[in-house]
Image (cartoon, rainbow, N blue to C red; front, top):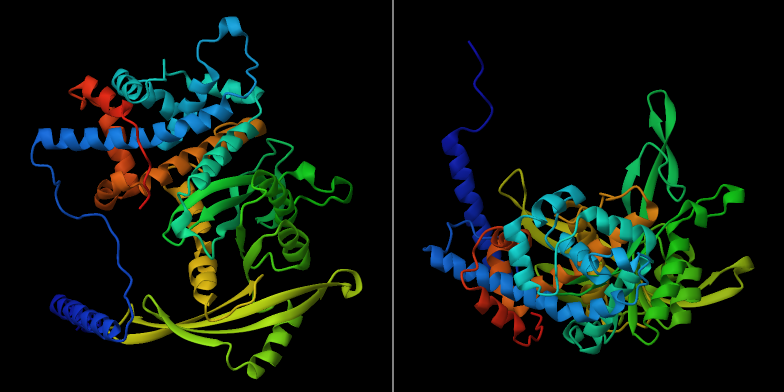
Length: 510
């Protein structure tokens, strides 16, 4: 006789599910009474299409495509002004497509999230797609073959493409589009490095290399690593800003020492300061960056503030000072609720950190720790469990009860925004890990085009006129919706589309 199963039956599972929902409702009510705000679970609609007739869908598709095109059109003059300065190395007598047309085509490739050059050639050159694209972007005289763009990128200064992205950000800053999202009137800039692609063969001398286990021995891998900088705001908006490629040739070849992330940060910081000499910047960085040269020789020298993660085993002398002084400063504590979390901050100001040869250099730091607790249902049972976490940051500015929330919760905690942005570029349509060309120079050009296309899509995502579409469809669903619109004859009145595109437009962010 077989043993009875230890797994719960169908009715028992239904009962457990109902009980779990009841406990969740009670937990939310208790949290609301205590002044805690449970996190909202944002997801796209699970219902059937809201459009009841073809005309309703046609109107919605037309409205969405026109509004997205108007957002892009409003930003393109700034971008094209910089791109037009790129010297065109081609023979003027043989040019069929202007340089700016090729650049716009490259940007739109990533705005519409084409997975490869082949897909762009296949999808974006279909007669219906071309007709609709020229209707929305009158400056596009024709759609080129992607190999034409690739050959152009081989011969031009691709760094000018990133400069166009920087000009776009400068224009938005000048027009105070981000004023509501600043942290203590500073622009939060998150820095993080990530691997772009890896291969088993050396396809360019700039590739970094490493040894990995393979069977009983080892093998070499060659990879591309990029240090990224993004504007990260507390409302979730992340604007791609600048990229710094690590290169084997930038290392100390005589000592067989490769380029590293900290050396790349020095180059990126120098470029960032040159592009934004007067911008009030707050650097948000992870546990790799708490060291004297970064905090003092770069950030303090450039007049930047910073909030940097401090790990438990980093800067032991600073931790020792913190542990010794925190008991003597009982007023440097703050309890507060943030979302569904109970937070307890404790900080110590004016900690001296010595570094350099024989500790001759001195730096004044301010350290804050945050102990958090929150309640949630256990995944394997219907019990309410209490979870805890601990965070620590080094601040460039003295901390007090008036600025601790802004600097920690609205600033430092949103450093994860750049990690989310990179994840989106890798896994959600931008093909970050696809090189598009095995020419190092061209690969960088496509990378800058991708980042520029992503920046434009972020502005569309947070634009007031597209808020309803994004809420119902999600970002990827909206882009798929637009691609479907351009691929079919949804525009019944081309003249109406032209008239609406020609109306002056002002970008308003949510």
